[in-house]
Length: 564
Image 1 (cartoon, rainbow, N blue to C red):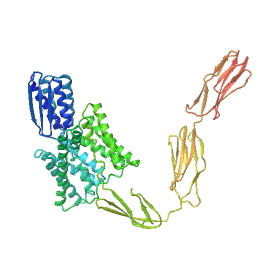
Image 2 (cartoon, rainbow, N blue to C red):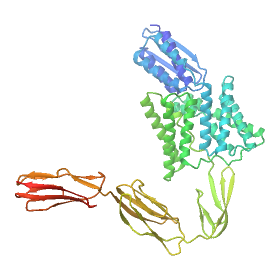
Image 3 (cartoon, helix red, strand yellow):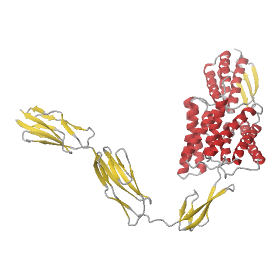
């Protein structure tokens, strides 16, 4: 066996793992395992962002050392997934060098996402996050063009410059220039929110995540370098934005990013944005959808925590724990690196200023820390909201005399029983001189409906609650039971002969079959034959008797019984 060639092929895999976005500890571990599978007596591997050094001792005692310089490229998670599977295959099967090379070459030649699709992915991601951070319709339109400009610039400069600081500086500068020009033309409304959304594509969450995971694995040097590389990239973004604002003499008329007020829009936009990020990171197939689902669920966890009064930090903690568990489970299910699901599902929980609310006159209007105002007495007051960055907005509130609100509401009936298709007028009674509007609703419109005047219409059998509610929040209810009358009843026998002492069970069928009518059974001669409530006839002595079944709606059928 040519061990030199084997080592070379293992290094090829390690090099592509690093280029595709794998953590240092994952690369080192994969190389160790592959070396072990070929029976090397000893293997020493050291990997960093710029090179891999590997020394092995063969079973024959030969020492082989190879060093590989790494030229970093953009993450390619689909390739990372394939390489992960290849390393597993090598460990399990110890294939010959030629087979490893053939499989490696096939993966190495994997194509990146077509350029038009990359542009589309950046547009989808940037625009979705701009909406997530509170951007309106105009802002979304500007985000489309700004994201496209960033994608085109990135495609050009990516061939010329590998330094993350310079790369991000140029992209942030071009993007911010487009946004600020749109603002000066009166198109962009919230330039800050647009930029914060689009910059999500530039922020190297991969470097931070991989760096932290390397530190946890005690690869302190590599982890620190990864994090520092991301910090340099972030500085490039900051300098690029500052340079654009300086050239255009300021700009940015918004007071910081404020998350979209609609939590459903938040969850959807962050999910779609993460799907765009998945495309940028070259994630393929169903894993793209899993990334979007991960982002949606992670944000939902955060929102639930906040909804129940949890702090911002606690919400972030639980969301972080959840996304970690989600990535772990998805990795096991799909037999893929957890980084694929982790990175595309992670996003800043907020990039927002803290808002402070105040009122110019608490005797007239009060305001809570969430912006909810309450009129105290007639008059005028000004509500002011201020961000920690010093931006503010005001709203003039006038409190007028309110109309008299009803202290209660009563309905003309608390319970109703209606036949199918029947109608009944419910009347609501308010306090004297009350001016409240009354709204009507049904708990199940498939059973019974109610119009704006309180007229109830029975639809099908069942029970439903009709509610009348005043504009002042008072309400009253009526329980409505809908019954379906029978239009016909039929027995399974019209004549029958029964021996004395024997029994016979008659079966009744109602039309329609959904009828709720109760059945009543009677005998014309109880000395000859009796019948119970279930239609069971008992023959007592010789003679004849007529058994009759009758519905609650008055329909009936008979059977002549002869006892011998």
